[in-house]
Amino acid sequence: MIYVIDASVAVKWLLEEETHPNAEQVLERLIEDPESFAVPELFCFEVFSVLQRAHPDGLKAFSQGIIPILQSGMLRHPMTEELANGAEPFLRCGLTGYDACYASLAKELGGQWLTFDKKAHNAIKQFDVSCFLQDMIPKEWR
Image (tube, rainbow, N blue to C red; front, side, top):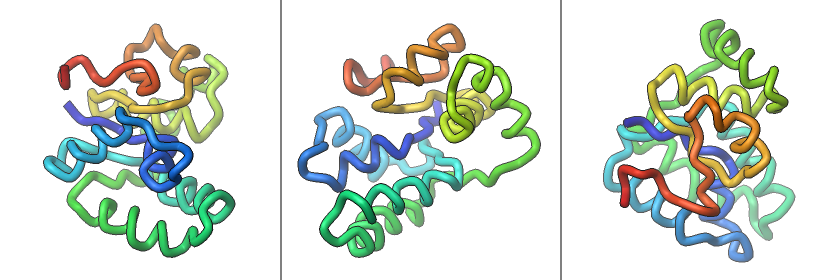
């Protein structure tokens, strides 16, 4: 299975006050098997933006903490017409355009979107494409 990592997960890796054991477990698995993970290209911009606002040295944190992960072999998926069209059902459920792209990518890849966004996860539960990491890790990891 392919796991699509939300920006909310990556932020927990780099902001001391945001750490969470399930985010750490995602990072460990990503390091072990990067080919089992994917992000839409917007992930890079979202994480960069949050780190600039919330980290004392956002550029360094991004350069040292995120760039190596992005270059590890994980899939970095561009915005395509297929991804945009696939986002439509998730938009109708109330997701933002960003979140709908994460969910669309998970669906397109036959995977699961890993997120700490409870509202987004709850809005699309019926599609079974997301895992709310605050409460659980993917079933396959237990």
